[in-house]
Image 1 (spheres, rainbow, N blue to C red):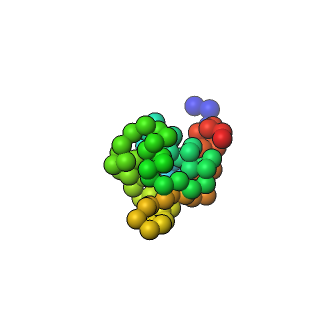
Image 2 (image 1 turned 120 degrees about the vertical axis):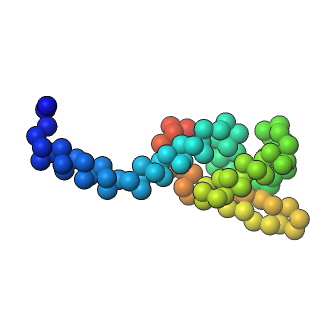
Length: 107
């Protein structure tokens, strides 16, 4: 054993205090495990705002598939939605920059 019992206890307390960060990172990791969601985030980060149909056209998948992925991203506050008439557009939340930086994905 390299660490003494006091150091082990301190590290255990420190790690337990990081519970929320660890949980959020785990959830973010699950969200980012889908290539379509990563593509959407990268597009929104680059363009600033895009409507669902534009995203679907760019990625080459159905509007319903894009909407499904965007609803997951919105539930975790990665994107914000805005209605423009009958069209729904999305923009990135500030959280995206941090997540993409952690994932080492640069725009």
